[in-house]
View 1 (tube, rainbow, N blue to C red):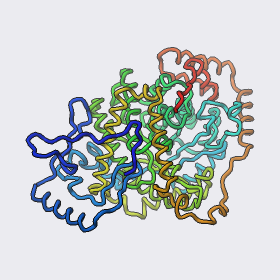
View 2 (tube, rainbow, N blue to C red):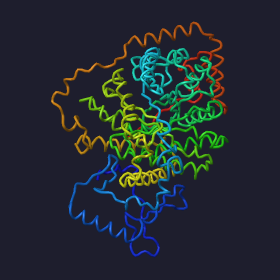
View 3 (tube, rainbow, N blue to C red):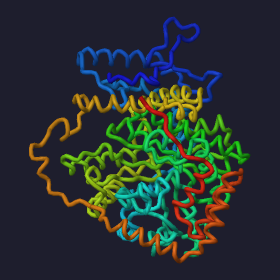
View 4 (cartoon, rainbow, N blue to C red):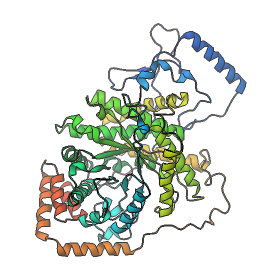
Length: 597
């Protein structure tokens, strides 16, 4: 069995003998973790009639004697995998508590009754590159090919609150996503795309309030009621401190801005998801499946608490929470991970936060194949990898799916590769038959056992994190160290060959370097166009109105009022992303990270 990192090691809960029993409860029998000091209440009951268990035990013992010793195996996260699973590993007596039916608590089998028979998932591709015109062209193309939702990638300057003419933006404008400096850029991106007919997701965090305000104003200029806007801003700043690092302000003020967006959206944008709590990027940074569930739900709980503490009823905003959880190489572990996270979140919302609306209990899932699983050698093999990941996401019951393009280990997706990624989802949806019934893998002895174990381990780690507080563990660097430790173990397993990556550490092709692939490159002219547009904007706008609006942003930040209305005012005055971010920074200050050793 692969070792689990020592930092924040997850131990199996201790299983004691039941009262009156002659022997300890075995791994196959009852585990009850319904202690008074926890809200999670993991409950299993006995396996079934003794005679049936005895017959099955005998059959299993005979089978084990016949096969003899077999090599040990474990999931990518280090969970031991037995060579055989039987009804003893997923007893029917606990079916209602652990599984139930789709569309009902605890939502293990999906959050909608008929799942994909009723409505397919939203098909998104993470798109955006260069300038607004480049991204608009790509969006129009993908929509014409059957894509059902847009997912906007932003360049690093936009994510970090810098304009394209900032000295630190040199060489980064439009490189990993589209550059957005002002309302004019947002309008150009969605030129000819009616915002009342599409759902748009923005992978944006530190500047989420600004980008959301720009999107709302573009909608208004199209004549779209803000109440009709559909989409998501990621707005999950806590994981930025742990993984991607595109933070601007310290954790406290950053958390306030997240709560401002959630509060504002609950009152003004009822169809828009104000947050997508994201385990995806922490998994890219190296955490394992257990850590991804536990840290993601710890962060989500912190966001819920921050808004509830403002006096908002939990059911007024929780139904619009969404989640972005990764899907990696290990097919069954990833399916089980999504199901375990969904069940645990339902219990947290119902029992801890006492939400009454069942919609508040549901973990609405957006997932994508993870780019860190793709290889730059033999990149066409990535088509197979992304197909398996897409299938795992769908079998886990996601509401929106993003498929990586096969060339993303080399560059931004080309138009041809993006089309293959979209076609992958469409083939799974319309040709594979997996959409015909809800939760097709439900009841698999292996899958249900794996789901249970992931949940149990995640509860243990979640309790550890929340005992000290997630903010405190971010600030002292312990969560970051835990992720770094897990990443080290994963990379060591690949380097040693214990974890096979086809074409990279085994089955290498001697001619792999001789590949002639046309890659998408971002011309340097993109930055020149953005700088020219900025100069023109500053020359033509009302500078006095901009100054007045930015002063309002600062006053809002200094006080306790919601900052989003002031940011909207600044956006309408044509203040830039960099200017609004700086106005907030003058009040909040800027985060300086702790050193991870």
